[in-house]
Length: 505
Image (tube, rainbow, N blue to C red; front, top):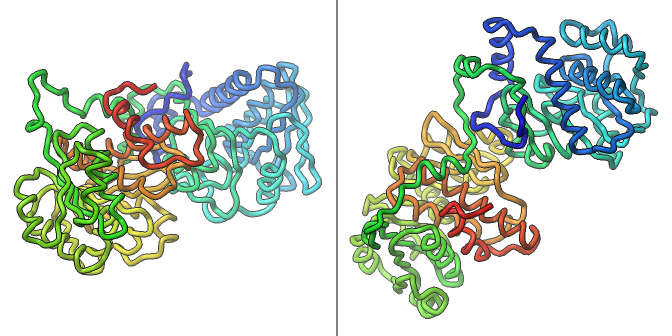
């Protein structure tokens, strides 16, 4: 078994892909399904022992499928170790008769330990110090029904630590959306293939700390199942960000032009500009309203700030830039429209954010052919771009980011918990980040980091996913020092510099 279950793998799987991995291990590699179930149960029990070394009592709620079978294995192990076990069986009135396959084998072994299972009712009290959710697993389709609905509500009200087996019951493994009602776990141990729904949308809230165990599957099993979604991590940053030559100078490190800052919104563009410098771009020019120039120079003299009131003024700056960030504080007035038209006509690699996205949606300016650019909508902007309700897009963020990429071309970042980036067939997910990032200016900082990475020579796909990662990890470092509540976007600046250089913890 994995020695470090907190070290998550990069590939992320749908429920069907995970079932295919399981089937491949059994049919092609001769690993009995019951042995995999035993390994899963042992893995869960090992985590429980590590997290709760003085554990005296345990409540396990089990369904009649393989997820419940994993719970039976845990129950037997805990009982044999002298822990008081309450095993609550949820499902058919004749529970034992509904069991089959590996779950039936686990049940039959459980009965040899003399542990007496109980039938869950709406009057059942959860007596254990820790709760194990082994109710529904990854195969759930449609909304949770009774008696599972009552069981899930009871778990969520009990106020005790909850560990989910494979996935919190009621959470969609493919999309991360709650299917009516879901267990709110403190930690989740996923097996064989890490389910992508654990790390985005509602999964970020309901899964708690996500752990993973491959159950000793050979690497050859994974070669048999293609995957399209990957988690971005520190290894990607080290691999993709080019080493800086010892004789480097600013001209080799990219010249970024940030365009934005309508009257009353000058801070947004300046946040993007300063973030870009912290992320290592060689030079940054800011094109903003004249009224904001003095404040910009006072705040960050390293940014070359210019008052730009007409397209002619912007044209001169565009000729010198390698990459453009447009959108932070741009607004949707005539000035913003003119700036956007000028940038689009220049046909340079760009990062398009905020009101630039909204203006392009209104004007129908997405071509699907802007291969060297990055688009960074939050769900509200994505709704405008696709003319679909936010709730519909959030219900399947993976499908939504793929649709956005087909609309825009290049690379698209769909921001939010478990941000996604897509530049074609492959989707990357970032599971770093925290709720403290839900403040004004965070998106501006992200666009600046992304522009800086484009300016340093990264392809749009790599700039997009690494920018999301650097941004999120920097915010986590700030939250670790100060807590999540009250973080400001500018708090990330020094941490961006550390993360981009691999100096963070």
